[in-house]
Each structure stands twice: as structure tokens, then as C-alpha cells.
Length: 405
Figure 1 (cartoon, helix red, strand yellow):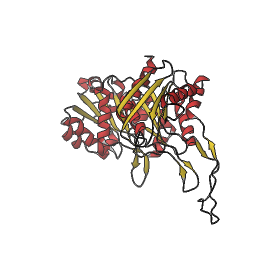
Figure 2 (tube, one colour):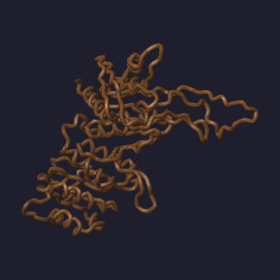
Figure 3 (cartoon, helix red, strand yellow):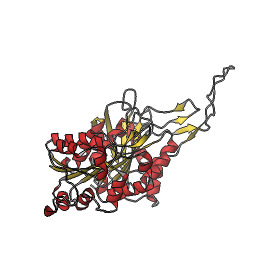
């Protein structure tokens, strides 16, 4: 496969040397096109030694072969890493003021960008608008990692590791058909924390494992994923948009904001039904008189039901697919499936993923067994195996709901 590796002018350009080696060792033919600023960070001798190809000098290199057009026309994949704020701004504006932006402008192949910049630049509205424009044009823009940046700075904007970029970029051309290509998917995961005082909180046993698997499966299906993470025992997935929250109220605010333009919403987070009515300003102490504190609880908002209401009254697109999760136990009155059917009817979501929970079941486990209930058909689909297997089944059902199958 013929790959063009575009390198923007940032300190993270040194990682592109490792990325180049990953591509060449996999047998791909790679042409490196650095910007002028990138040449200040990594010398051309490095690119030529690792790629085995001369680095073109610019727009006027090999004019007789119309090189500035030919390179983009012949490429099977273009990867830009790092993609700086300036480079993405020029690409979003359709500029062609150097060889790399010329190549991007004529490319008919998949284009993959891995941004890297300081946090303030990444979160700046101008950059966010440019990323949105590029994604709307079909360019895949990977989410940067959070971590150490130049100097003492730390935060979102770090270039993902070469292995992650390599795998994600090749999925654009090597993967089977991607049923969620171009779709926006919001996934909530983990368990919310409801503060009692500055030290203690009410929580639950959710590890976030299933949510991480869902995010990976959605990304592999081609979706632009926004992952909203409450407390989790596992790291969030890399290379996707991430919002961290703690309480149910914070989760509600983040979810409602993220779903305004979503095609699919998957509410996999374990949201606390109740929170303390009052937050103590200091640690609650044990009293000498032996009286125990009485903690009054109030009900948290039902985020899943609110999303359905917003869709029904037009505040969300009617086509948005909404998927809920239910962790249920049976009792002497009814079984878990009956409780799940009642919840599906009450919530009004399109699909409900039922987990039967208990000691040693579901929470923090690597294996899972779920039942996926459909409101429109009444069908129940069983999915058993690893949490990745379950996630693949849920994402496949989500894609089916989108296309009506």
C-alpha cells in the first residue's frame, strides 16, 4: 500500500519516526511530506533513511511530473501526525500553500489526522471548528491523548503513541465495511459518585469495562465517538473524545450537551438513583452520644428518560437511536426479564441491554452475558462472551436500528 506520512511542525514530530518504521516494517511504501516547520524538529535524513525514499522539496519538485498533484492521486492512505493547529486550520480552509496541503486537497483516498498541540490550542473554539469541518468532509481526526506536553504543561493535546495511530489509521483501509462510518456516537460509562462530605461518597460497583469495550467497538465500526466517563477501574480508551464526570448531575449536563447532534446514544453508565439531599461542608464525625447520622436522599434525574423526551418533542433528531442499560436482579415478585421489559416500556428507548447482576456477576468481570431487548419488535437477542464480544453485538444492533434492519 502507498502511504503518505505528513508531518506537522511540532515537538511531537519525533514520534513520527517510530510511526514511519511501523508502516515500512509492515511492508508499506511510505513517502514522507514534512512541513517546513517539521524540518526544524526532525531532519530529512531521518525520513529518507527510514522510508528509503527521497523527501520531496516542495511544490516545485519534479514539476514535469506534476508532483504536487500526482502524490495525492496515487496514495492509498494519507496519515498526518502530528497534525498541528496551524496545519489543520489550513487544511480546513482548503489552502494549498505547501506540498502537504496540496496533496491533501487532491487526495481521493482516506485521510487520517492525529493532532498534537497544547491544551489551550486544542480546546480553542477555532481549532474545534476546524476539526468539525474536517470530520464533516470525511477526514478522520483522532482525539489526542491527555498527558505531559512540552515543558511542565499537562493535559489534552498529547500525540497518541505511534502504535495507536498505526492501528487506527490502517483500520480505514484494512477493516471490513464500517456500518457506523460518519456517525456520531455518545457513550456513557462507569459509576457516578454522589458526595456525602469532603471525604465520603455514595457509589456503585461499575468498573467501566463494558463502556470501554463499547467505545472501541463503535470506533472500529467507523463512528466518531464521544466517551463520557464517570468513576472507572480501567483506563478510558485512547484516541477518542473524552469527558470526565463524577456525579449524576455532572453526567446529565455532559450527556445532554454531547447528544445534540448524536446519531446513537448508549447509556452504559451506572447512574446513582439517589444523592444526599445536603453536602456536608466538613467530614461527618462519629458523635460521643452514640447517635448515628441520618442521611436524607433525593432522587437523581432520569437521564435516559429525559433523552427520550427530548427526542419526542424535537429537541433531539427523531432519528437518534437511544440505548439504555439495565442492571437487574429477580425477586419473589418477578424475574429479571420481566423487570427489563417493564423498564423498556417505561423509558421508551429503542434498545435495552439487560444485565443480571449479583455476587461475582457482571461488575468488574471480563466475561458477560446480556439480553438485548428491542422496543419496536419485542425481540430479545442473547449475547455472551467477553465484554468485547458483547460490545460488538450491541454496536451491530445499534447500526441495525439506524438503517431500519
